[in-house]
Image 1 (tube, rainbow, N blue to C red):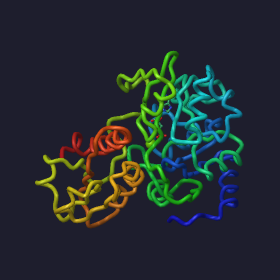
Image 2 (spheres, helix red, strand yellow; image 1 turned 90 degrees about the vertical axis):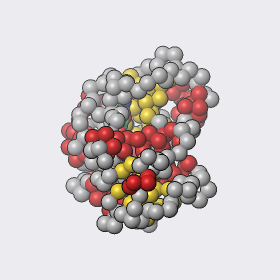
Image 3 (cartoon, rainbow, N blue to C red; image 1 turned 60 degrees about the vertical axis):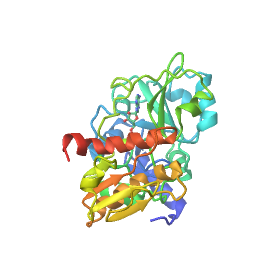
Image 4 (cartoon, rainbow, N blue to C red; image 1 turned 45 degrees about the horizontal axis):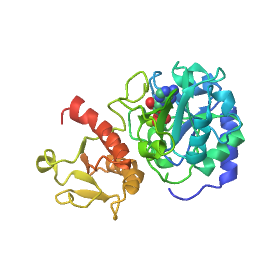
Length: 324
Ligand code: AMP
Ligand code: MG
């Protein structure tokens, strides 16, 4: 799974598919994306169809250089260049008013578009070889676990035209999304780049709440395994941890009594938890010996905020809609 493909030929095949209006799964540094020509509304429609994604959930547009930013977004100011200089290529998506060349289907009819430059050579090569920006959500069925390997994509989306295998993604959770406003910024989705990282460049955080209007795709339930999934806490653990339970472990303190344990860090490094989280969910989901999955919570500071956001959304369906 980790072996590198013969890069150039595969990228050329993938680029030809994108140019012809097809859909390609591509690695990025965050998770695998399901990409199509962002300027071709029919190609983008196939992304929604393949993912079974509701049309109210806008896509992120991926670019490989700063050259055509002006043609994609309007009201660019020096903050965009400052943030790009510091964080691109990298896991930061900026939401700004869109230009007319971006079809409405990409943004679910919103007048803004989210754009980022991924820090992954295969993705960058693909965008350049395709000669267009690539709209790409995560390459999973809507609501399910995001893919961090090509195998995860194959499992969920067997009908995709082509999968570019770039091994395991190194960051493992989705990009931080920020909206730039006239006087500051608002975090719409938490990620590895934290509020503090951005505040060090732009001191006006307007964050109050994430509402439906500002970020339509941010649902309470998301990233959900097909098996019961719960955040491990003292209330759920004693009654439910047994031999058919799997634990996604961070500190090593909760491991007793579980059938299987996946320890994501030996050194309490939150980056390692983020990088391994979705892979561990996939692995327990596929494991016939495991019928319930627990994940250890972490402190909600820095990257811990993004991790707890993913855990709560993965748990939501099972805890509140399924009542386990
Ligand atoms: P995904 O690429 O699947 O991780 O999802 C992309 C997410 O980015 C969406 O679910 C939205 O929450 C967010 N997003 C994309 N474009 C916009 C936008 N124009 N305004 C607000 N949020 C956006
Ligand atoms: Mg997603």
